[in-house]
Length: 204
Image (cartoon, rainbow, N blue to C red; front, side, top):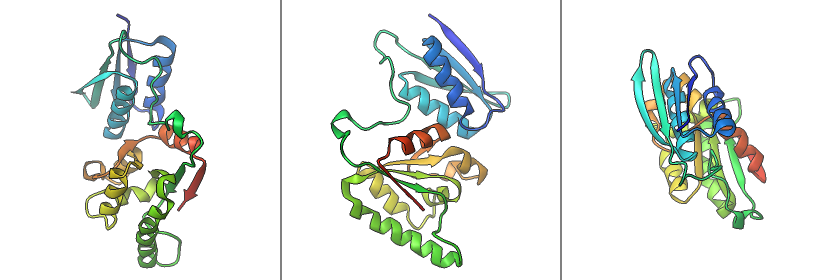
């Protein structure tokens, strides 16, 4: 049984995930232990390792967390994707990503901008099955937390099968990690992958 230990403390997003990705691709360890020093990295690495076929155990340590992933090599897939990719049968279907960078639309008046954002999300269902993912970074992550005026709308999207990715570094910056109520905590690797796979990106 081969194992790898990684000290990812002090690395900014998506450093910890990339370290794990490189280690798995180069050595395919049956056990991988990654030490991180913040909650966003903890969530991102845990989700990544789980997607790679590892059972993840998280233990607190001095100044952070140790995530230990254990994989049954005989039954694990060789190259599972770090984020959900479209099925092969959907390869020709349009896949639109709504890339959201703020909790309001436009500049000039914040109240108006917030109202426009509510209207934008209320209109997104018009895209039908073409709406594939909603990616939230910077101030947009405030829309996915407790008290958000569009929380029910986002939950409806998720229930309908739309993947919602919420930047973990951004949640941590605003002190909102423990208030997220919808979507998957994500990292910049997932964001870039989503934009690469999209057939169209709507940026707001």
